[in-house]
Length: 255
Picture 1 (tube, rainbow, N blue to C red):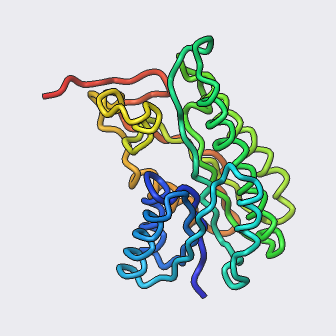
Picture 2: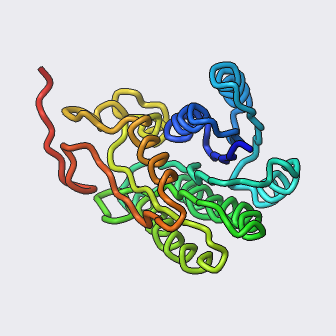
């Protein structure tokens, strides 16, 4: 039987890149996202190109009831999930703490922390029954080091780091692997969402950099799932060569 991967936030960025890569390697996909038209487009393309089965699961990770109802409603044959890519997340705004937008704060906490936990709990319960599985949690260099105007976004990713450590400990008895993947600057829709559609500002974040691509991150995620059963990469931070950490960059002037 083919292996099954469940990917949250599969309609763009890292999630979409993972969908293509895992399908290319023969995985059947459960894909999640709020934008149903994008889910349908992704499902159609992946099924046609790679001849794998795709189950669409359009729930909002922020909605506790939706998450647990949707996972519970997955057909029985699809519940043998081998890999969870717990990817759905966002940054909203980049403001000094005293000038922060409360709606932005709530969106980040509800998605990056609460939604992250809801999905991990629902899927880990299925994995625990089978005494196997691999959970990939998408963190960030922002979960390792706080930068100016990062405050609540960084806090949410620090929470992902702590929760990944806690899950790794608590799920040991079920033989479930837990890997935290912490990318640095990656040129996806991330900054466009953060700056609420301001394309010029979003693009400026990557000035002078050959940033990571979604495909780069997906390749690292896939590699982590290919190791022998007794080997687990617990925590992995990656960046482009021009980035040292969450703050220091070696930007090059444009030619």
